[in-house]
Length: 466
Ligand code: FCB
Image 1 (tube, rainbow, N blue to C red):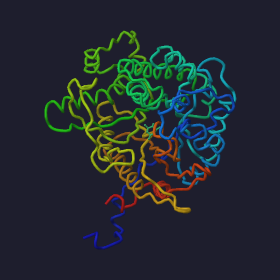
Image 2: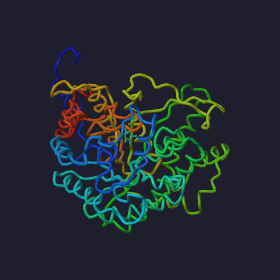
Image 3: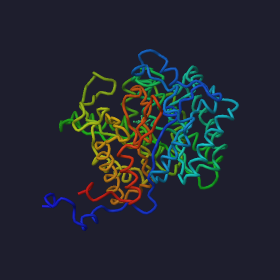
Image 4: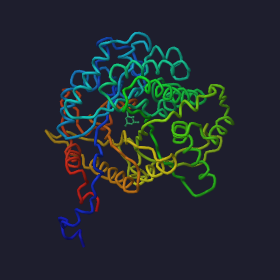
């Protein structure tokens, strides 16, 4: 009956419940994906510069040399964030701008750049959330073994001390690492991302050193940061769904969850690896002698929040010996984004509730959520109804989790700008702001204006939720 009435009657608007008071709305970016200025002010080479320079690794041979030229345009870009009325800005710090060769004397020009970025955010009323590692390892450290080497974790702790010492008076909220699963698996097992290695046991070892470096950084942070500063890890979490109800698929799904989610959640939030996955990897030939006594306790140092990046789900079927993991993913089911990722907002609610229930009610920040669609600029307008629908559904999914009692404090949309999407280059557009890479002109997409209205109302419009 409502549908035939056209505009919704006023009482329907009450159905769109507000987000809690103090809930923060933000946008997220990362250094390599937007900054460009690859050779400026003493920046060193990162594994992503090397990867982009290796023929065949990145679509179209795209590189991060210019990207969105954010290094020179950060003030204008932060003006856009302020124009939308947002509360918070997540960005990452490029390790090779701070320590061009990974260790040693810091490069003051690099620290100064991030201080200017943070000051510009604060001047615009934006609360900064700084990520220490969003995948751009100094190449020199890779030459010495990268995350497959324990020493890289020690280098990360030194870098953390430098950055927190330089910016800790201005930045309250810190993320140690963005998505260690991606660094370890896509970087060391699948060879899809830098450094482009394809060896499973090496990837498991790399995952341990990434997690260890998180724990070491938390310790360093507690002694270097002013009281009240907060730190957490950001994990990319994806609910796993069995492809069928056979015992084999259900068992494979538990393993997929262990491999993708619990392998990171359990050590970070409980201080120990999941026993079933230790056993499974051991049967696959992984020798865990790289885990030293006390490592798990270090990884499990108390943190102040859990950062969650949510995009999609995995559909799992058992695959016997055909793969190292003994399972494989079924093709995604429609509807999907331009990345081919299944759109599954209700699984987002389930995930948040599960984290709350199984991991001791952590405070959660959604540090990324968003979608790529094939946007086209049409003069001063970019109409992206699919992204508006995607975001509306996912914000509503998160709000439902809050209503169910989840301690969700903030939500950062990925991403402010269209940007360098790693091995896919500049093809996929994730921004709520369209970037013309020829002219560097920025245009708000309809989703940006929609987001501005959501933030102003602090609730979704009734039409989006009924
Ligand atoms: C996440 C990354 C981010 C971006 C989005 C689409 O895995 O953290 O840099 O690539 O996916």
